[in-house]
Structure formats: C-alpha cells, structure tokens
Length: 560
Image (cartoon, rainbow, N blue to C red):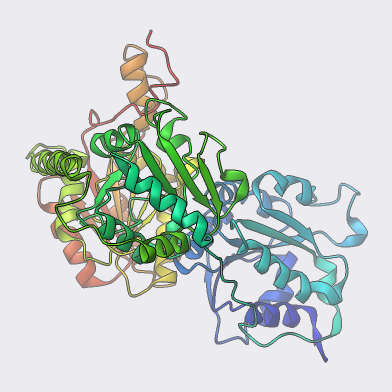
C-alpha cells in the first residue's frame, strides 16, 4: 500500500492498464488527473478541440491497437454531452473505448447544480457500461475495471464518471504493475463440430466464406487466407470490412451489398453454403434481404457474441467463439484441394473473370480526364500511389461510401469506417487517432466538404501534436447523399443541400501544416506523394463533380 493523491492514483491505474497514449480535452472537473499527467513522461497526451472528435480518435486508436482508446473528458455537463455521437459510433462498431468523465461534486448531485446532467442515464444507450466511482479509494479499481469491460468479449465503450471532489483526497492504495491485465485466449470449436462443417463444405456446390469484423478483431487474417487457399474458396466481406484480407488477394472478391460490388454480392446470392466468420450479416451488408442472402443457403455462423448467432437469418449451425481461431482450426484439419481441381472450379473461374472485368471498368472510370474531378479518379490515383501499408479512414457521405470497396486496403487493419452509426464528421478525427496508434503507417482520411467542415478545428490538433495524416477533402459543394436523394426522388427540388466551404488547404497552411489544391487528373497522386515526402499534417482540397453522387438508401424513399 502507498499513500498518494487520487489524481496520481488514477494515472498509476492507467499505467497499470497499459496506457501509453491518450486523448483529452481538459476542464476543471479533472484537473487533479491532468496535474498528475504532468510528471508522466511515458504517456503521450493529445489535446483535442472538441470532445466528440476526441472520442472518435480514441475509437480509431482502439481499432488499430486492439486495446481501449482512452479519452479524458475534463468538463462535466456540456463537455460530456459533446461525446454522445462519438460514443454511439464506438458502440455500434463494437470498438473498445474508455472515457473518464468529470462530474459535479457529490454534495451537489441531484440539486440541479451548475453543469449538472444525469450523466449515468445519458450514456446508458450509447455505451457498453456506465460506472460512477462512489468513494475516493476505489478510483484505481474502477479504472482497471473500465478497461477490462471495454476489451472483454464483444468490445465496446465504457464511461467512468468521477465526481470532482473525490479527486481531492489522499488514499492508501495498492496498484498492480503496469500491463498487469490478463490476456484472454478465445477458443475455437470442438473437433466433432469442425468435422461437421468440413462435410458440409465438401458436399456443397457453391460454398462461400463471408468474413467480417470478427476476423480483424481476432487478427485472424492469416487463418482466413490459409482456409481460403487450402479449399480454393472465394471470400466476400461485410460492409466496411474490405480489409479482412488484402484486397489484391485472388480469393478476396470484396464487399457485399449496396456498399460493396455486384460480383461479391452475386457470389453470396448464389451460394448454397455460407461460412459466416465474425459477421452479424447486418443491414449495411444484407439489408436483411433474401435477395442477398438466399433462403436456401446453409449458413454456418461464427461470432464472439451468442446473441449475434441467427439474429437476422436462420443458421444451420452457430458457433460462439473467435472467428479467426475457428478458420485456423478448420484449415488445419482439411486436406488441401489441388489448385484448379476444386469441385467449384467452374464457379470460381466465372467469378474471377467477372471480378477482373469489374476491376478493369474501375480503372477505366478512374482514368477519365474530366474537370471537376470524378471521385473514381481520386480512388484510382490512390490505388496507384498509396503504399502497401496505407491505412484509410472514411466517412459515411456518398463520396466516401463509393470508396469503401475501391481503396487499396492491403495491410490489416487498413480501413476505419463509421459503420452502422453512419455519421459524417468521423474520418478526419479517426485518421488522427489511427496515426497516433500507428505512426509508422501512412494514414489517409477521406471526407466530403460538409463533413470536414464539422471537424476542421482538429487541424490545430494535428499541427500542435505533429500528427502527419493526409486528409483528402472531396469538395462538391453539397451535402452529397441528400442532394442525390433530392435529385433522384424529389424532382431536383433542392433545399438546404448546398454547402459553402473555405479553401481547407489554405486553412491548414495558416494553421502550420501543408495544404494542396487539386482540380485535375493526376494532381491527387502528385499531392499525396508530396505530402508523404513532407511528412507534415496535410490537407488535400479536391474539387469534385457535384453530379457524381449516388443514392444508397433506395430502399427507404419513394419516387415522387
């Protein structure tokens, strides 16, 4: 036991949880913790300009490192309320985030005091768990529990409220050594179950592996590749997870559904057996439609969460476990199918040809020389210039949604998307968090002009902390998704759909970073090359064709 101030005890508990990098926006409610951080030279602190952006940064950090991203929200009330969207996005992405939130003093709680909100109730719908520290001596215990819960099982965000007066005490406390949290191994299936799956696969005519986030969280890509190669099985991806294996692998056919491509969607639609690894078969991939997941298909679903098994489609067999581990165990017990002699050889050849035609069409579309630029030209140039380890962050706007199956995702993880939350104003902050997590990798974020305007204050964060991401802002002067719907469903009756933006590249230069303005073919690739060479926080402002927008939610609107 040692006697220490509660702020110091909190920071020592963070060290014990393995924290070396953290995000925050300081405020008076947590100044004791901030003061203790002053002496911790082994912790990198990134101060942000808006709490929501800080939460997105912690979210991305957690996805890249597979350890909870930490955000310290310094101010009770308005500060914590600003985090709601970021927490919702993390919850819907099952991303491990821990938030330490200041709270009014215990003697003032329940009195409608200054900056008092019911923070516990506020966060319940958008978190995995909300906890409030009851006594000073329990602060370290609650911090360690928050990290354990955030990263256990199906991951998610945890908020820990600490009343500000509790931090003013001295306590006797014993804190575990740094990195003292146990590593938990998640198992695979028993041999009898694997034998059953093996028999079903070999009896199938058109089997497909459909892989999702569970492969990435378990770092199961090597096992997925081994299984696909051993059985000569095509792999399709869930929406937002085209990086489950390198996109240039011959068995990776890309994303399924409206955010994917027609070849992968047809593969799944024609499957008689679907091995669903680490995926819920959720809305953004399937739209819960029998037109994408055939009712006649036998589904084997593997997921870490028992509640996900069979939730949207009936399954022949469900396995609660790590998707990558199951894929590896199954690969180990299967005899290799000689290349070119798989029972589904003709099917594979047909879809490989279709896939190659699709890629050729993309390159042709990307080679158009029009001004302003078509988004396809930007994606094509990124495919040429981005290094193999590039990591991309995208938003949910229409220009970014067109990119989800077209980016050169070659090193897992390589794609960070808002997923089911579907929010814009995500990608720039997420890119900063990803770069903090993996400073050795090239990080490129893609935003629309409306989206980037929501988070442009974080350019100062990037410069202040030397976070050298490359932000590509695709400026079409519109709220792209909405103007597409007004064009396609409401007879071009445009209202509220146009956006006026500054030259973000010039704003970044004024802030102290690098800025580039592109309007024509080849200029995006040149700007990315220069940005990588300069190695400074960078913004590439690209003028994009306002007509190059797509209506994705065709299921939700009726044409007038």
